[in-house]
Amino acid sequence: MTAAEGHEIVLTYDHVIACTGFQFDNSIFSPDIQPALRHFDKFPVMTGEWESENIKGLFFAGTIMQSCDYKKTMSGFIHGFRHNVKSLAELITARVQGTDYPTITTALSEPELRDTIIDRISTASGIFLQPGFMADVILLDGPQAGKTYQDMPVSWTKNAPFATGSFLQVTLEYGDFGGDSLHVKRQNNVFGKEPDAFIHPVIRLVTDGKIVDQIHMADHLDADWRPRNARNGDQGTVLQMTFADAGGAVDPADVARQQLEAFLRRVGLGQIEQSTAAE
Image (cartoon, rainbow, N blue to C red; front, side, top):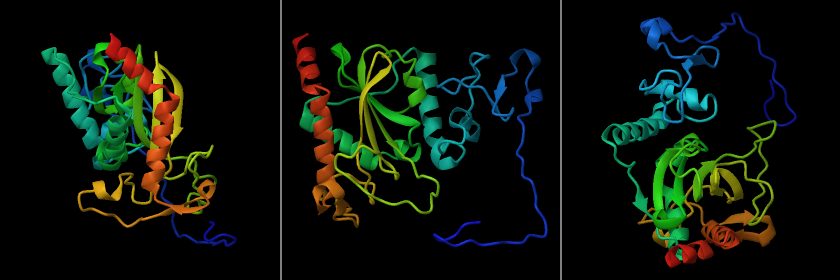
């Protein structure tokens, strides 16, 4: 096995135990309601709402939810699937009661929208602990403009009621660690072409189900992109980080604001807001 760069370690073992996993016991279900399986028959096949694809009304909760993000994010663990369970409960409640999924309203003017997004990527545990799997969704069109869904499965958005039209999708994601995840060379840029390897915000503009623009913002060693005076006394530890194209160390909160403002201007969000107001 490899260790530090340029070093190799040879180990010896007395026994090797092959932990080859498990298979889902489908026999607990009556034959007419047995869910279809996938991932080597380990998990039921589920929709983006954790509902069996072949048995309508059969939902799954807990670590079994990892069927939807198998070996990708954290649904196999309590710190991940607890957010899935909350979303599932609200999805089922909305379906049974015929009500809307809980939402909030986000102002679409650039300063307020920018600050709202920065606050969410810095404080929301759902999108942080379920990177690339859960997202905040901010609708941009018509009378529903500003309507915001928080901590929703990205897969759910593909068949959501707002699948046609435009919305912002806000996630936190990891980049490419290369061949050795224990030896990653950092090179942050304000406007670099390659996403940072460590967890960082990703903002996408989605129109009619297609990603038409996106930005991978810079990572932050505190994972808090808010200005220090907006942290409610929790000041963190990182004052500055080195950005190659900035010529040295700068405040990463300033970089986040600059990146997000540039993206919002690029996608013409102000124009979208004006057209919505005109309607």
